[in-house]
Length: 336
Image (cartoon, rainbow, N blue to C red; front, side, top):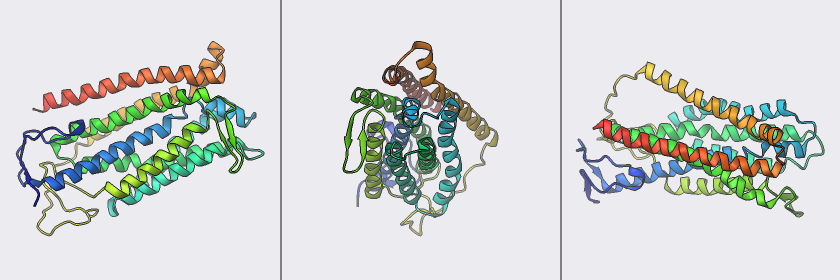
C-alpha cells in the first residue's frame, strides 16, 4: 500500500496542501495524488474556458463588420450578451447534472459544445447572407459550453478540506485571470497574420487574424477532453479532509461515513454572488465598447485596435493575477 500522508510534506504545485494540519483519518499518498491531479486538470479547464472567452474579445467587432455590413454596434451588444445568456442558462443545468452523475459527463459535453462553437465561428463568413446571426449563434453556444465553470468550482470546493479550500479557489480565480490575460495576448500575436491570411480551399477555411484564435481554442478544447478522460477521478472530502461518500464517487467504500456539514451562511453567499456579478458586469461593458470606442476615438484600423487593445488588457490581467496571489497569501496568514 502507498505510504500514509500525515502532515507537513513539501507543498505541491500551486500550493495545494493541507499544511501542518493533522488528519483525523489518514489519506493515502495514492489518493492524495489522484485528488490533486484531478483538481489541477480543472485548473486547466478553467484556464482554457477563460481563454475561449477572451481570445476573440477584441476582434469580434472588426470581424462582425467584415462578414456582414448590416451589423451595427447595437447588434454587437446582442452578440456579446449571447455568451452570457448561454452561460446563465447552461450553468444550473450542468450543475444539476453533476449532482447526480459523474462530473466527467457535463464537463466533456460542455467542452465539446465549445469546440463546435469555435468551429462554427471560424466558418461564419461562408453563408451568402445573415452572417451576423451565425456569429450570434456561435457565441451563444460558446456561452453554453462555459456553463462548466459551475461544475469546476463545485468539484474543487467538494474535493478540498476547509484549510485547503481558500487557496484552491484562489488558484481557480488566478487560472481564470490568466486565461483573460493570455486570450487577448494570443489574439495580439495572431494580428500579424492580417485580415487576408490564407485560404484552405479543400475545406473552405480562411486562416487569418480572426479565425486562427478560435481554431487554437478548439484544438485546446480537444486536448482538454482527452486529459479529463485520462486523469479526472471523482473525489470528495469533508471540511476536515476525511473522504466522504458521494453520489458521484465511483468507488466509495462502505466504511466511509458522511460527516454532517455546518450551516451555510446565506448572507455571505448572496454578498459574494453580488460582488461577482458586479465584477463581471463591469468587465462585460468594457469588453463590448473597447474595440469600437478606440477605433472611433483614435482612428485606429481594425488591426491596430486588436493589437493595442490586446496589450492594454494583458497589462490589466497581470494586475489581476497579482491581486489573486495577494489574496491567497493573506488568506493563509489570517487563517492561522
